[in-house]
Image 1 (cartoon, helix red, strand yellow):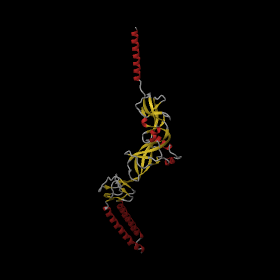
Image 2 (spheres, one colour; image 1 turned 90 degrees about the vertical axis):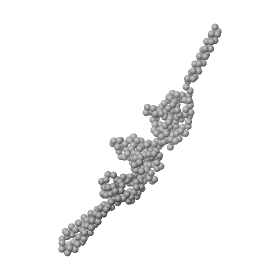
Image 3 (spheres, helix red, strand yellow; image 1 turned 135 degrees about the vertical axis):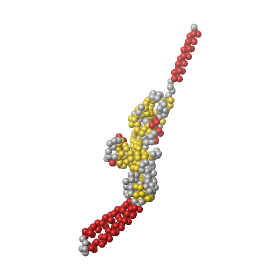
Image 4 (cartoon, one colour; image 1 turned 60 degrees about the vertical axis):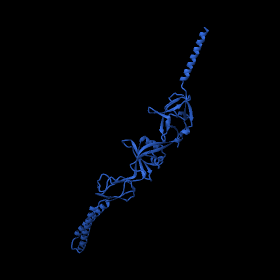
Length: 368
């Protein structure tokens, strides 16, 4: 009997130990993850807008008279000065016409000179003299018109600028009705960047600008950045100069123009880029973008509560300069601890061992 009790007690002890061991093995262990404690700081928001680039002036060069292109004095992309020769049209026919017209002027002048003394001696009436004078004026007008035509055949640049494409070649026939221009001269000493903003964006921009009147706000707006089509930031800052007076009735957007210095002539008309408008913010919550998740059109941050458990919290954010940070408009408060490691891996309700990382060391690149 004693032996039987001993065996039963032994089996019960083994069973309890086995259950305890199994429970220990299945309980999840808390893992260490890095967290930051939210503080407020200063930052800069960058709003980006696709822009088209144009010179101060882009002038189509067209022929004023009919003729064949006899000479081309410039090449595509060449920098030219105001008054510099661009093209010369064939003037042989016009030159012959000018010779004939000049001869008619001389003949008309002779006739006037012949009739003057006859009128003075009352041999003939002054009607004949007046008719001769009218013929002389007509001959001179015709001659001057032909000379102007010859002058128009020599085409000069109306401004300082850069020569555009040259679609026509030597021998091409052109006239004032030719659809395609001979070329285009672009003054690119300053480049205009044109872009559009919607009504909400326009209000956000102007309400954050200093000044009482609309024009004062434009004058006080910060310098803007131009991101080139290759992704590089242009070395010179731009300045917003104008907003359109009213929204486009079809798109609801406002047209905006920014001017950008272009002394090196790197920027050319017809180019494209992206305008960045900065907004400087004080005492805002900034967090790394990679400390958030996007779930069902919502932005989520993982907050660590007092029991060191992870909780998913919806937040509203705006992008910060550089694309690595968010400004949090709602959802987080100072002193909240959020996960910055294991985001996307750690699930809600998981207990962790928080490893506190200095907030400033993480957010410093976003501060301005």
